[in-house]
Image 1 (tube, rainbow, N blue to C red):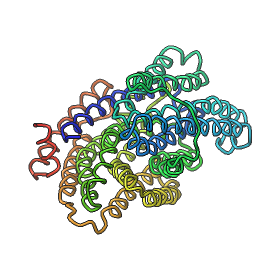
Image 2: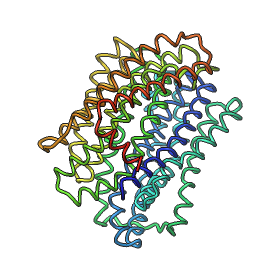
Image 3: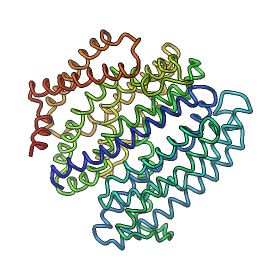
Image 4: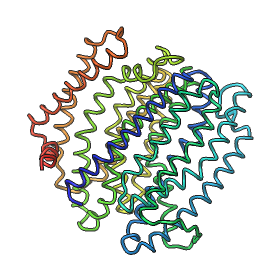
Length: 505
């Protein structure tokens, strides 16, 4: 794949993914207006966190594990690749159905009371919500396995676009039916809408003439690899989710702040962060395999380092802008109805701090996939386990002192430290590593960010309406982007200049 083609693909995937994520943010904004941060919303949040959120994270891990299995088989023979896809699809659906049955059974046990620090009636309601959501697991698993197949066939846009009809359907529900059907109706709508995501794979299946042939072959040579890689990637690809679950699980007990403040902060941070990062890794993941097969290990590691540097040159200023405008973004998108100024302040503080971990999140994602290409899973596993342990310890140290902000800071520190550690381990004794471009990016980001923070404090007075707030923030953000570009050109940052040359050609 030529460089310009790669950049064009990344751009297309990013735009489609961004459109889907923006619809998701609109959905969350309508949800915030409808349900706010009251107890009913917290029940939905707890149910979602302990079912669909975990399911989608695990299913995404299955997708990542399936891609390197299906890609070489499809290149050798469509028949061989489709047979492997059918087997993995069968295994996934059976496992998901079994897990869903166990999940539903668990909702009838005292486990619900341990998940909810409230009345017995509320715990029972939580169980009812989780039973409905558990029904989505086989659908989610099948959807992501088909996404893996289509990615192996170089249909990279599907993953970003499949949530568009899902979000549109839920936006319609929230706009028309939320007031009458309440949280319970929304839970059912969320579960049913997953069928729309599965349906988005149909046109691609028709184009590639793929008809699922369900069969079970546990003796296939790739099955053990699939399970082993899935278990490892379930942790390494969901590290922020687990940190977020630790944060939201502790916040009510330690500070009394609403769990939904973390929920809405996460629903902003995750899509904005993953839009570009996952778009890049989705397109480059197959490229990693080609590079690894064609070069020696040191050359491959230097190639990955170059990809990471170039990505961070974009991620770092994004992190800076989101952190500077954290509370205004929450105010514009969510404030209104039951989501009041106090909800905005709590959610905005958490989102601002989370935004500072974007660079670490980016490094963890790209470097983990680089390790998977080398069929080495131990290092990502240990690093991410260390992140969870670090976050757990820092939560208990910082949470009682600084409340929700302290918990968010613990996650930001843990994620950033983990990304730095994995980078050091990946590049250890490689040689020929250029760190000057990254230092230049950091300095330009710090200079631009410092200026933006000072400007924000002087321009925003807290009394603006939403329209004026948007105008001011967009203006300052555009000015910050111009300053950052000028600084990068002034210091002649190598990766940035290379990106500029590629787009010109």
